[in-house]
Image (cartoon, rainbow, N blue to C red; front, side, top):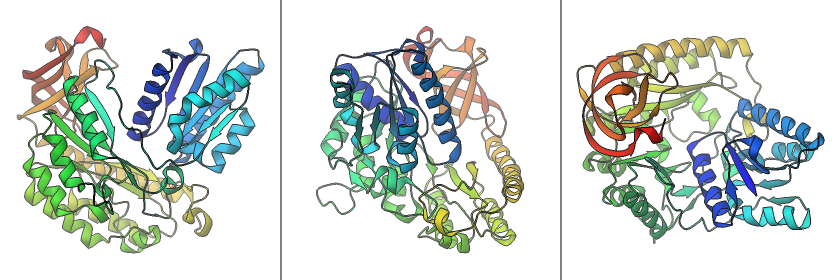
Length: 444
């Protein structure tokens, strides 16, 4: 079949898309670039907030119209939304042919066979204990995503991930290292180690190393850059900080979601740490890793959040001085404890608080980014910007960096002198290169 995959959501979903693309190609199917050319369209969905769900509903409605108008089209849905009753109801409503949950994505070939040969719809929503063993890196890839575990054993009251991704399951060390070495041999310039809570890797498994030990092992493959996401403060330990400090090719960037600066709100969220512990972790990180860049997630307007609670979040932001943050208004998700038991705040309250937090974030991002002006950073130049005048890359500290297109002939790692900064972007001039990986014309 001619297949097109549309991916929404996080890097875990990107990795899952790569997984099924590998399965599809191995099974003799052809991947096409546009939905219009496809016989099978697969939506890899996100359900963390309401907006991604609305996008899926819109697409499913459009595909259903096309099928009713006579188009011979098979529609599949995977990802977090597929695992929820909400998504399953949508699948029935819009006539989705294939429904595969995050724990069963390797059933995709069986699903296609059921539709093609027997004309049956196919649903697979089980969580398999064994994660896929090995993926081949795509050609001409600078960044490789490598899932080291799946699921989450924390049960935050606002979060659907334990429902959609299941309990924590760690991949075997052998399969992770096999894939990492293959990426290194294929010329991949950076690896992202992925998991809902990477710091829990190997917990309760005496046959597996700790996450800190795994970080050192992956760094030792010689991959130029190693990153990881996401971390939970409850499991972020000193040995991880030490591994980051010791390994030159582990990027000095940490994404550590705090969600709120108020202990009262953290308790209602069922986050197992408190403000003081979070600040202790930040202090240790900054003491051991000079020039570290720290980002976070913050939920504004969680049910019951008072003005005093919100002020506690603002003061924590000032105390940490985050380089950047992903900030969201609380979005009640069906099936979560907060949806069932807590009354939502008025939207105007959430909107006003989010606006104030964004202003605080702009202040700190501008201040933190300004310190890099005049310095040289190693930047992985990845693609042409939408305006066609610049190339876009990311520094070892995960800054978005723009360089003039005429200065770069190949994508890859370049040394860039930073000339100016905004709250969200650094602008620079190429001063040299570390590796030249892909001719620029292949990314145009």
